[in-house]
Image (cartoon, rainbow, N blue to C red; front, side, top):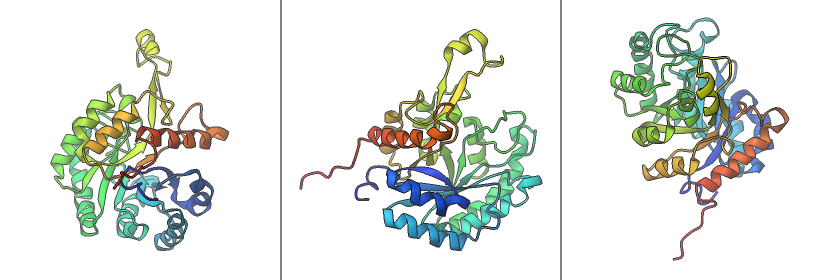
Length: 298
């Protein structure tokens, strides 16, 4: 895929357990990178064998595996999160087999405690994981999703607010710990993503292609604590974000990662319209980056 590494690859997220079945069906649409995701655990999946099978598929298309993602709560290990921390370790250990140098996910959180209370356990867990990752040339990126939590209580993740990012990065001042950023998760908190990205871009290791639509008319009439929804997660191309600005900021800062579309959230382009929306987002984001790579005359 000549030129893609100069021009910021656009890809999508695929569940790790479904990758061998799904990838041959979607790669012909033109996705250039893939994030493989695992919910709470890598389970009984043999990552070494999966890497071999996946690489055979993606290499044929000139596609890269940009990240492995484990979405669970590695700080508590409670309930279905019992294997989450071990899954982070396995993902870090095997990332190189996929050709990936990023492992991403939620920080975890001490359930229903203020963010401050989770920092000692965060330091304990990710202090060790960051060393394991650094030894293997891997970077750790935290998704900025609140998972229904706020500053004072919640579950899953503390990395959803810029003040929390300051505290996290002060707690573990490691160069290989950063963010898996997307505008959507900040917009649901009514944060403007553009100035935020400009400020934090040096800590952005990976970008999810997910947007939001904010219904300011509903907010002005009903506020944010009434019964009416006031914001929706959107597939890029259907939301409020200026993705041309996002990509310009990323490239001006020398961003070397990808933008991988996170689907399965759009209230309109869903169900039988899921891949219609994702392929539209793929085309849209390619245009926002300037279209196809065109070499200069020599």
